[in-house]
Image 1 (cartoon, rainbow, N blue to C red):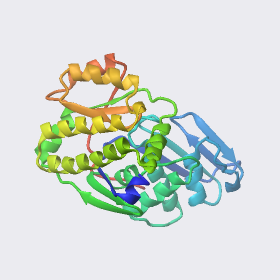
Image 2 (tube, helix red, strand yellow; image 1 turned 180 degrees about the horizontal axis):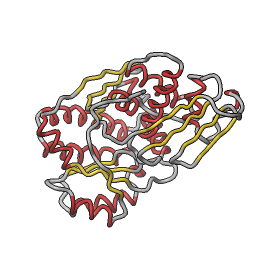
Image 3 (cartoon, rainbow, N blue to C red; image 1 turned 180 degrees about the vertical axis):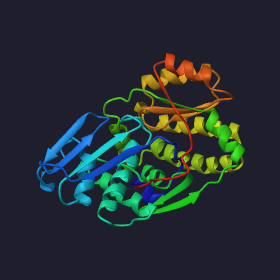
Length: 310
């Protein structure tokens, strides 16, 4: 994310999984003219026209998308996501992509996956106080496993084709665990980027090292080297923690200790609320250990397709 991606170029290895953001646009209906509903959050907004879409902290992604891609007439816009807010799994990016796909379809506009990702990022960037990179939007729009490079404003997209047997083994031996996300987790990003802008040597060194790890991960995946993947995840996690003390929360620490004791080969945080680990074999014991430590185990299944609209 900027300013690092603008000055030095960013690099992300990203794999899409089959946890989805769902958006439904239903045209027509009685007044009030516009209904916005987030089923999973239990939130609802009604207004008589698009001028009432004020970014006030309630359903801002829906409002921001409609302000960029307005739809005329009476309608209901309904959303739900398979993961909770703050999980660190690209929920907001996927939701923005789904919103742009639904609204542009209703407007009879055709955008390719890359355009959808770019517009979705603009939707998110337009919300007050949001500061994010583009990787989640590109992953949701394209699906699959990619090497994404960033030299703002350009995005390089390189699909990674894994050996089928290795891809299946990796899918089975990854343990994805969600933990309670702390309040103010976005403050970590702000502190890290501010430190980078000040020229903090520790933060700058960690960011550059993370970029090197990402490049090494490309080679490990192409070489079907599971042990190397695990080692690189652990190395990346060390650099993440060097960025800011808030990168490792107490719930994360409890889950990490439990899964490490259960034999994990390596793992890292995926954001403020989730972690991923490579296991040496089947994951039942590690999953039970994670649950006992307060984590929630989520399914891992590769998503070979990106956003779909119908």
